[in-house]
Image (cartoon, rainbow, N blue to C red; front, side, top):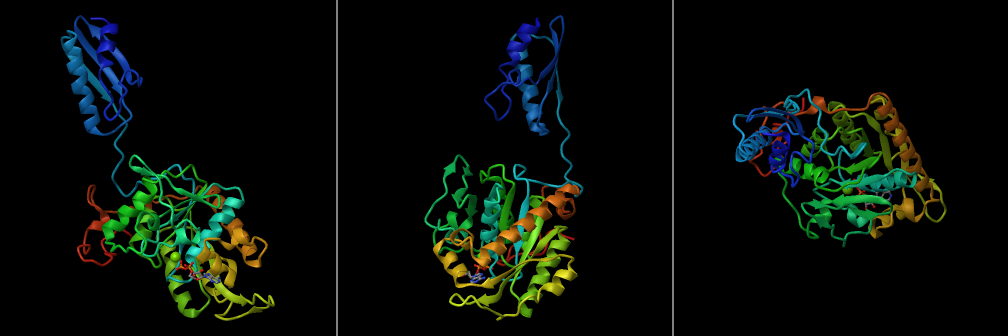
Length: 384
Ligand SMILES: Nc1ncnc2c1ncn2[C@@H]1O[C@H](COP(=O)(O)OP(=O)(O)O)[C@@H](O)[C@H]1O
Ligand SMILES: [Mg+2]
C-alpha cells in the first residue's frame, strides 16, 4: 500500500452535499500506512454527525476496494453548537446592522418613515435594504412604485428588487394583489426567517425592517433570528397613540434592543399654499415618553399632502422633493440613527442570547401552546 494509492482511493469520496471530493477540499490531513493497514485523519467543517458517518463509510469502502487491510478513519469535526439559551443567533450574517421600525398601531406612518429613512441612508452612502415584514398589510411596493414587479427567483432563493438605490423585499411582492393570508404563530416565525435566509440580500450596511403594528410574534421572531442593532418607534402626537407607542418602546426594552429614537409623525401641519405650520394633533407630546425610555425624538414630521401623494404614487418625498422641510427632517433623522448604530457597535454591539427560546432542542418555541387556533398565538414563545 502506498500514499498515492490511498489518496487516489479517497479522491473518490465526495464531501456530502457537494460535487467535490475530500482530497480536493484538502480535508485529508494524515495518512499512516502499516503494511496493508491504513489509518487516515479527515478534518471536516461540518459538525453534523451524518456527514462524518457518510465519509467514514465511503472512505472505508474505497480503501478496501484498493486492497487495504485494517482501515481506521478518524474524523475531526468542529464542536456541535450548543442548543442552549446561552447562544446568540444570526441567520443573515452578511448584513451588518438591523433596524426594527415599530409602532404601537397601524396608520401612524410607520411604512412612510421606513421608506424615507432607508432612502435617506442610501443617499448618505450606506448600502441599505428595506424589508417589508408587515405581513398583514404589506404596502412598501406601492410606496416605492414597484407593485407590479415580481421578484426574480434563482434556485430556491429570491433576489431582492431595487428601487431608489435600495434593495427591497415584501410579502406583497410574493402574493397576488389583494390576497390576504391568515397567519398563525409558527407561520409568522417561518416567514420572518425566510425573509432573512432565502432572500439574496447583498452585504448590506443596514437592513431597515418595517414591522407589523403592535408587539407580537413577528417582533419576537425577528429578534430571535438576528441581533437587532436598534429599534425605531413611530408615533403620532395624540395621547391615545402615545399609550400604544409606550408598549412598543417597552418591547424594545424587553427584547434588549437599543432604542434609536422616536419619530413623531403627523406632528403639526404645514399648509402647502402659505407654508404656515399649524398644530393639529399636538406637537412635541412624545417628549415625556422619550425621557422615560432614555431616548430622544429624532424627527417631528408634519402632516404634508406631498407625503401622502408621494406614498400613493410610489415617489417618496425624500426623493421627489429633497429640498422640502420634511425631506430635511428625514435626512437628519437618518444621520442620528446611523450615529446611534455606530455608537452601539463601538461599545461592543448587540447579541440576542437573552431572547432565544428556552424550550428543548427540536421544539419550536412558537409552536407550543395555543397555536392551533386561527389567532396569533402570542403565548408559548420563550421571551422572558
Ligand atoms: N406626515 C404625513 N403627512 C401626510 N400623510 C402621511 C404622513 N405620514 C403618513 N401619511 C399617510 O398616511 C397613511 C398611513 O401611513 P403609513 O406609512 O402607511 O402608516 P403605517 O405603516 O403606520 O400603517 C399613508 O397614506 C401615508 O401616505
Ligand atoms: Mg405600513
